Image (tube, rainbow, N blue to C red; front, side, top):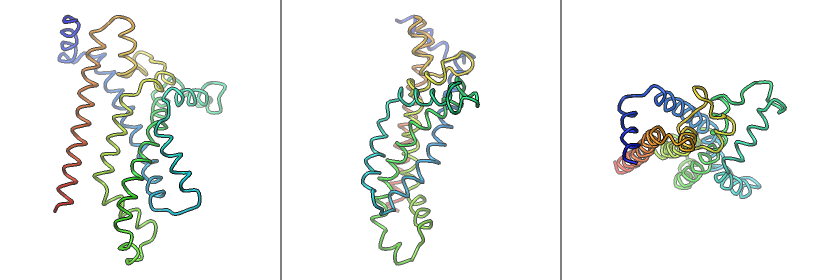
Length: 232
């Protein structure tokens, strides 16, 4: 065990090429998926937060339920659509980073939408009378809410990224864990552990833990900045 940890730290400190390739692909896939999920989830969350329409409660139930989507189910659905016999098979995206980005986006977009809806709804309730007195349009109201809640929404985005970078079930189904093509940190850890190569698995685990700690530190920093801004 001690030897495995020693080799793991050597790999991390030496900047091993294979290790770096896996980490960079993981970050590229997860950051892209997070950006797309925010582009989809934030407007949906804002519209539901500021809207009053028939069936709103049903929409809220669906949004909250989708936060718990099983990753393997998402991976299976994306696989069925991107497979050669699926409706999108002609695109040839299966077992590519694009398929992994798509699966992660579907997985975390409901999380972003649901969390941002709660944040924006609370803020909208606080400023509703002021917005009505200013005769703001729906679009202007949403823009004002998004800007005022930017720090809280950044926290939502970071939470989505943390969920994406730790994902393994969906990406291994649609990505296939192909060396030098679709192998990311979580899938590589699973593979190397099964092979008995604990050094590489531990090295990737260390990096993944550092990223998780970095995300949590960023969330805390954003919250402190938001608190200071509110106080000022």
